[in-house]
Image (cartoon, rainbow, N blue to C red; front, side):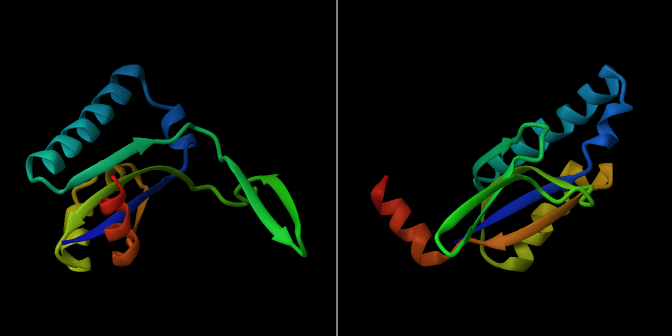
Length: 125
């Protein structure tokens, strides 16, 4: 089975208008999604990232510059991820369709982990 990273993007401003009860309902959906992944034995890992855009680092001629990122015109931030196993891209996309972020107006980037790197990591652990 291949490994796939589901990168979850959303505009954090969408959540500032929610009541604590609405926020709790959304979190329950994420917990249920994670439980389903575990039950189906395809979950490898997941984390929600902090509600801030992070830092972007770039190297230019040997000098590394760090800036607040992403660019200010970007409204969506990477807010979390799931690492799953699936037999194909199509299967990974089908799994991602059930992620609650899509109900909140967010998006998911599905990326396959390089099989050679995944195999080497498995051997190392």
